[in-house]
Image (tube, rainbow, N blue to C red; front, side, top):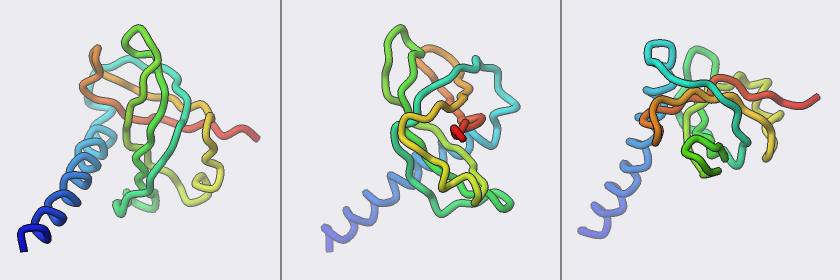
Length: 112
């Protein structure tokens, strides 16, 4: 029984992190921050949607603190944009603070 409770709570922890990152994306126009480019590393689709867009939690490399590190943030993508995701593609992010307190993906620039 304890193992079942532990597994359930462990699963909820990951969802809580996703919710926080999605909240940062939803409020991105309301907070001050810097805009820069980053490099997409990996992505994970969530079960959350916004209108007809799907939320993804993306991991990317960026130089925000004087050296390249990995960060995570939410991105909302149209269905037509999902197949264009490629490791190494440039993305545009907004972040607040150093180290970043809030991060949101503003756009993903697929190469044609």
